[in-house]
Each structure stands twice: as structure tokens, then as C-alpha cells.
Length: 344
Ligand code: SF4
Image (cartoon, rainbow, N blue to C red; front, top):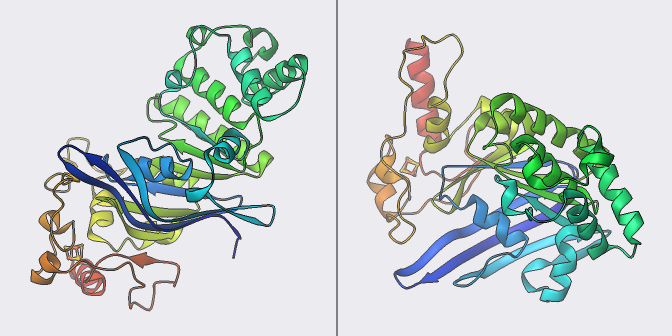
């Protein structure tokens, strides 16, 4: 088994708003293995980004990590991120943990050249001369395959296309050789060919730098391409967690099944309507009782309305121990679905 780089246990992150407490992340436990990619998938508002921002401790008031542990293993040392003093945490950001976002312009300053912004990030964490930091910036632009990197380092963000700006962000994020890269919807704003190039680039850089990646997306195609393990979130909870091939072969939770069923399938008629999961994600201010998915679940029973399930190994012989699910009736649903397939 691969060693963990980050181990999250029972994380709860809440926002204390005037309307009430928004329980954005509830009891989330997951592991990001060293050198591997964990995919966090789910609809908007399910808690994916807040989980990631909790790791890098960028939760601002009225948000707060209420309880739980986030352990970061650095050269044999276990660092508890939830209690690390802010000055230490600042050093971790960039040098150990870096983050890239969907929209690069939220991180790039329009009035400075891209080279100077990357060089500044390098100088923040390393005692190097301006010349060395600049050379590192050019080297990073070259690594993210920006043609004519030496010249383009002196250009401003608005001189770059969306895909190229995303590469600049990746260059900046990786300039200090972090051990964990958090990529929050890194390719969502890009068209499909540029998206494929950015994902290829991330994979190649992961091999070269040996880093772990936490990739956040609502796109199962991106998960299939990038992730080693997948964590499916719904309404602030982890509802299913498995290695990627296992999850794609045997999705068990009704929500995961719904996500898979709503994908377009090759070979199906173009005018065929996609299936959707009925209803909408509940407001985090008013989560339903019991299983939070019950108002949208085709398999819900009385017990689901009253009793919250636990994340557990299902009692199914074909399912490996690494596959866990948050549903009272995962076994019965699987049997029902198998019987339906056989009867066709
Ligand atoms: Fe559906 Fe009940 Fe399972 Fe929740 S616990 S996913 S409502 S069957």
C-alpha cells in the first residue's frame, strides 16, 4: 500500500452565518497517497472545494474548521495542519502545498509580468537572487510547455490565452516543488482539446516532480483520466470511496449510480435525452434528516428518512475492502440492479 502524504480524519468545517450554521464539510475522512492522485467528485455545493481549502487552511471567517485532523507527512514528520501556527502554515503554502483554480486570473496579477510573479513566488520560499528566481521562472514556463519561454516571461497575463494562463498558474504552483498540488476544477473553463492538453501536462509533471494531486471536479471523464482513487461527495459527506477502476466498474451508492447514468454514452442516438438525478442538492442550512440523499433516491425506504448511514464496507463478495459506501441498502440495491440486468 502506498504511504499517505495527507490523512484527513473526521473533518468538519462550518460557516457561522446570520441565517444559521452551514455545515459545508461533515465528518470527512480521506487519504491522499504519496505520488498518487485522489479525485474528489460531486455536484456544486457538495463540499469538495471547502475540503480542499481546509487542507491549505484558507477558510476565512465566518468559516472555521470545527473539529477533526489533517495530518501532512513531510520527510518522516507528521504535521497537524489544523493546529499549525499561521506563520508555519504560510511556509507550507507554496513550498509544500500549492493550489490552482478554475480561473487563473483570480491568482494572476494583471499589472505584473508572468515571469516576475513566478519569480516572486520562488523568492518567497527560497533564499535566491533575483536573477536565479527569474531563471527558475523561465525554466518553469518551459516545463509547462510555453513556447519561447524566455521572451514570454516578460509578458503580462492578458497576453496569454485561457489555456496558456492555466499553464502559467501551474508553473507558479510548481515553482517551489510542492509535495501536494490541489487542482480545483483546473480544466473546466477550457475547451475540450486544451483541457486534454492541461490534464496531460499535469500527469507528466506529476511523474517528473513526484507530487501527489488532489483533483476536484464534477467531470467523471477527468476523474477517469487522472485519478488513482475517487472520493464521491454529496451534501458535505463522503458517500462512496474506492480505487478508480473499482468505482467505474461497481458504483454502489445510488448517487454515484446517478452520476454515471447521466453521462452521454458513445454509440447512443444523438437525440436521446440524458438521464438526470431528480431534485436538487439540498441547502446546507436545511439538510434532510437521516440519509441526506433520501429525497432524491429511487431506493429510499422509511429507515433512510430517520437514520443516517455510516461509511462502511458492503457485504458483497466481489467488492474489495478498499471500496466503502454510505448507504443502508447498498447490498440489496446491487442485487436488484444485477437481477434487472439479467432479465433484459
Ligand atoms: Fe438511498 Fe437509503 Fe441508501 Fe440513502 S441510505 S442512498 S436514501 S437507499
